[in-house]
Image (tube, rainbow, N blue to C red; front, side, top):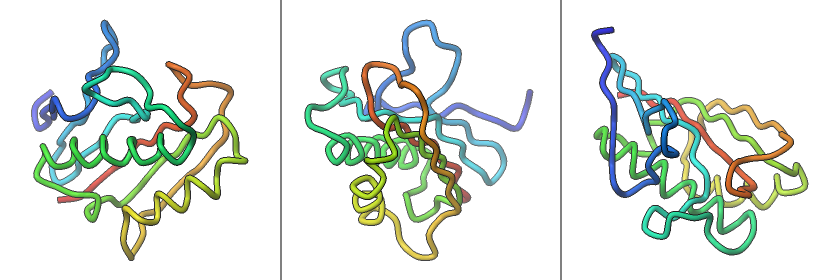
Length: 129
C-alpha cells in the first residue's frame, strides 16, 4: 500500500520480537503511534515503580516516536489509554496533563484485564502534521 511509511527509533522500545506491527506509521498528514508500555528502551523492561513512573516512561516513548516523525506531543489529536486498574486514573492523569497542552487531545480511557510484561498502562496516539 503506497502513501504510508514506518517510523522507527532506538529511543523507544522495539516491537516485541516476531510481532507484526510498527512503532508508528505516517499516512498522509497523520501519524499513528502504536500503544506504548512503560518499557525503558535501554533496559528492555518495564520501569520500576508504579503508575506514575510507568506513565512518565510511556510519555517519553511516545515523544521519541513522534520526534522521529518530526512531531511532538503538542501535535497529538487523539489518545487511547488502557489501564489495568482504574484506581490508577488520577495519578496517571496528573502525569499525562504535564506532558500535553491545551487544546487537549480527544481521549478514551478504559480498564482492561492485563497488559504484556506486567505493565499497568498502555497509550496509543494519533498526531497530525
